[in-house]
Length: 288
Image (cartoon, rainbow, N blue to C red; front, side, top):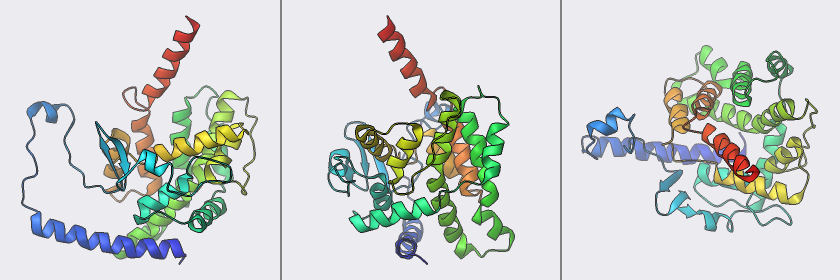
């Protein structure tokens, strides 16, 4: 077992025990009341999920493990000659509840690089789709094609005991996170750059490698992507896509199935697709 995985296992065991004690001691306490309009609106503004990794406040903005965005632009390790934090650092903060060292961040970069290879059949599946298929549709289908490698699905079919569910889920999550940049970049280059793909560079950090595979080699763009991926790493589980991932995962669907479901929620006009609509609006404004 790797150092990171062993450290996470110890942290997770402690948190799980705290969770059991919380439910045992306060399980019957009424937390809040809800209105009919909140229920009718799909649980809008109803806090119904226990989460510690991040908290989104209407006035303060988002905090990750209690740290504000300005703090997180300073505290975690950075790439050489870059003012922005490495997303690997925020991942480790959310996983372990502590600011990681530069060595830990570099080790994680290397581990994700070692897990990043995508099976040939996934690219074959993508290529069967019409070239004008929406990128989010391609992305969701490609994630499901990756599911053939699910450690959780294989071990569950073999009779894995419940106390090992976390282990298989950890492996799937790490593999999926490692593969997502290559997958997203491949779909981007296929949709917008005549399938002129760019090979990954395992010597780059996770975000810089993604930027390069997209086709942007400038240090400024790599810095921007590091910050962008850091800020979007977690949204407290309350928005539609994050909630969907947790809900589907609660059925013991593996990480690939759960994440694909989340991406389908994200693709809706009132969620992630809103970003696309804003870009269209901004371009139209500039043209006018």
